[in-house]
Amino acid sequence: MDNNGYKDEIFTKRVRAGKRTYFFDVKATKSEKDFYITITESKRVGDDEYEKHKIFLYKEDFEKFREALDETVEHVQSQLLEHADPQPKAEA
Image 1 (tube, rainbow, N blue to C red):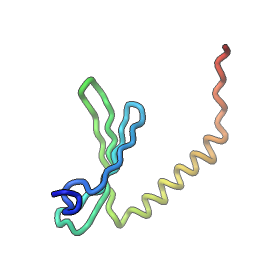
Image 2 (spheres, rainbow, N blue to C red):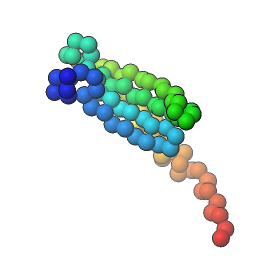
Image 3 (cartoon, rainbow, N blue to C red):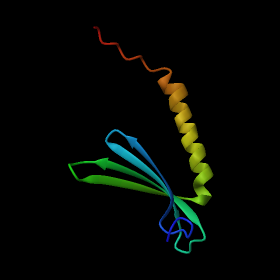
Image 4 (tube, one colour):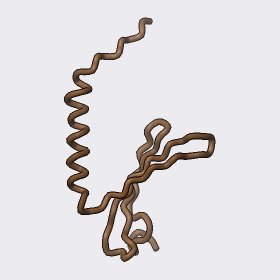
């Protein structure tokens, strides 16, 4: 079926980050009456070989997950990156 009939991915977002690619997919349950998110990290480990890790996130956990992710990113940005020593610049 297509996206209007729900089957497989209903929505997908790909984020490329160096050797890794992250996929955020919204999928329907088997009954097609509910939804969940999968987050997949795909990392190239050879010419045509990939290592994949997947997290399943169910709707009852969306808000807690989002809050924890937001808090973690905020901590890194405000506490760790601000206080990190600047990288020395290469001399010309």
